[in-house]
Figure 1 (cartoon, rainbow, N blue to C red):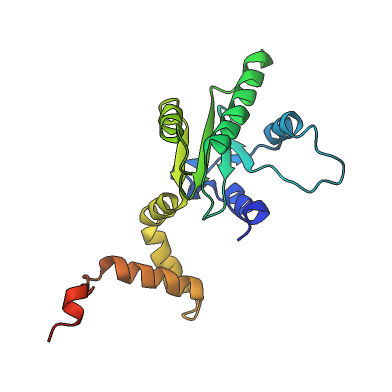
Figure 2 (cartoon, one colour):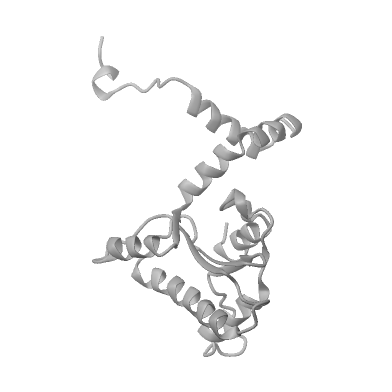
Length: 192
């Protein structure tokens, strides 16, 4: 699926896919507007580019979620962009002055498919994680969501048409996870 808008829309509508605790978070258009104005003020009229983030939150927390297409690796540039987005909102939050509009936390999340081979990428990643950023590969995200929602998926599978390819894929994956290994090693393949 295309990163924008398909994946972003899916995550915006179902933030629990990223974290089950985010079930009640809502889309924060006002925060996205601030970031768009700050980071794309040079975009010419008619430019169809979209930023790679979405903002979700509740009354005390705002979360900037940077979404990269499955297969796309991230590097220092992408991590720096996420830091920039979060720092912009944190600065705005500090200047707000109105206790009722301030957030107690502004967090950053990056969803990706791997790291680029760049000098300093691992230390930057470690620093960000220590600072409260969450940097998650797609496969970890999907594994955690599936594990946490296994019972729900089983009910859906029972109620769905048997020829639904999405349900068949879930059932195949489940069978693979629980079936004993039948792999034949290279030497065993030719044994007589």
